[in-house]
Image (cartoon, rainbow, N blue to C red; front, side):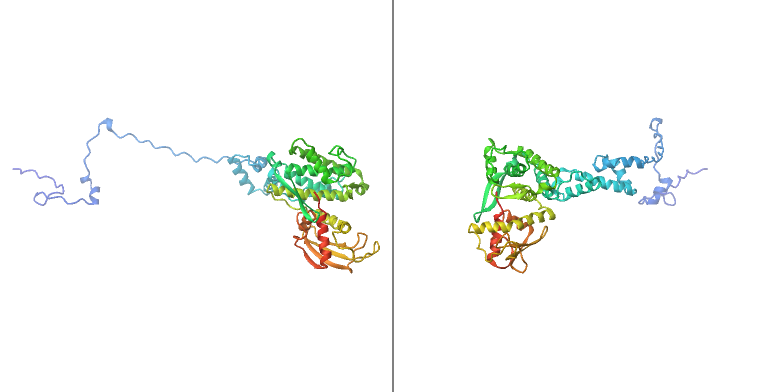
Length: 431
């Protein structure tokens, strides 16, 4: 007789078939197929979708690099920052590998920097001269500019560069002209345009000496000096002087330089009448260069812009002119009772009392100043005083921008002679 069928051991019964309470499942139980949950069979519609394996795309090939010729043709656009991002990257990668292209790129980048209009005033004052010298060295000029006209040519070009970006309002910026007269400082208020009008009218004295048209049209009587001519120009205009004055001033300066360049050697001795004194044409060009620089500084101060002094050789020429004029100015002041009487008159050409003027810095040098007579010869043996000044400070003294009492001079010797020379230097100034 068959007994009851035994139930299979499912892991939850004790020996003899008694059920037991199952304990907690361990991690290994999850791997036992006996404990795997039974899933009901899925309907055909519930079958898992067939998975499709995406094919692996092959690695893309990098685009070919531009050729050397193409990259070289892009250097100009790269220097101007006109390339696309990809072209810029390609060019700069190429520059690390190709020395000739790297040198060409640097030259192009430097050239682009020189084209920037705001950098004109920051260039060295001798750049124009160096460029012209290099050009003339390769192809000499048939009609060169005289050496004594170079300072005027340079200073007018520098002032014109300062003016080129001025707007209408800046042309009417107040400017105060300063000079020394009657033992005290004097001043005159005008505008930037008024200063250029002043330079135009005084340059007209040089133009008249060369037989060129006077900017005042001959309406001012002969013999009028710079101050009278300037006052007439300011008052003759029905409207305030404006930026329109720049064109005639600039064209007149170019005409002056061109005329003396074609005139030949003897023209340098032609006298220019300043209405009270006269200067040889070569000295007159130096004097006009000096005044152009001084008034350019006045304009730059008015618009709060830095302005450098002239180049050393040009500054030296301006100081030399002032030093050569000092004995004559001393004699004029002595006749007017403004300087001490001579202490030892000597025959013309004989050695007389002397003051040694030492100018330091750019354009500096040493000058011996005859004290008692313009005709006396300076003498190192008869030096009674020494004065030392910085070159720019001496020029500011000669322009009337620094008073004799304020001049920070190194002084040694005859105090009266030193005072007379410092006041004579300030008396060189005028409006």
